[in-house]
Length: 127
Image (cartoon, rainbow, N blue to C red; front, side, top):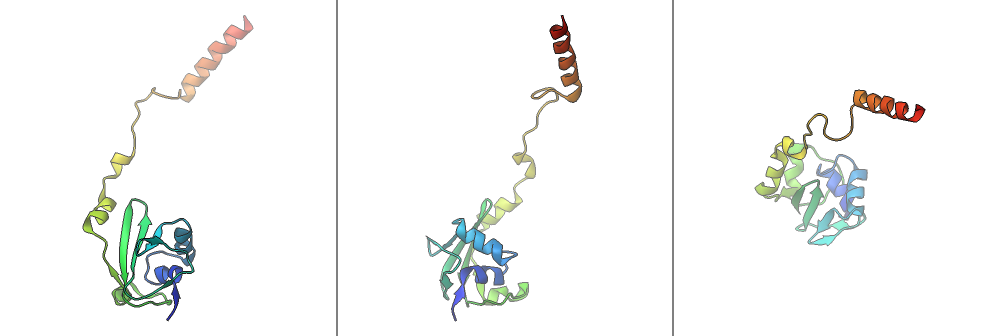
């Protein structure tokens, strides 16, 4: 059975929509056996698919191609998840590390400070 990779990735629930799967292929985020795959590429049993989603690279082995979306419980019949634990740990990274805190007053002026600056500037212009 010939199944397009975008349909297969949607069917095994790697992506929520087929459009997302096709866009990932177009963006070079999907590789089959180490080679970037176009959305129209057919998948075959035994192939290794790597998908880059954010910081995580998911790895699947094709057990059996399917073009019909399957329930989450049935996914292992069609795809074997080979994603290493170290990649999945990236999902659990603390969120605080991604945000930079800034002390009040450091950076752009507040609305009140901006009004004071404007008043001072206007007083120099009118003199």
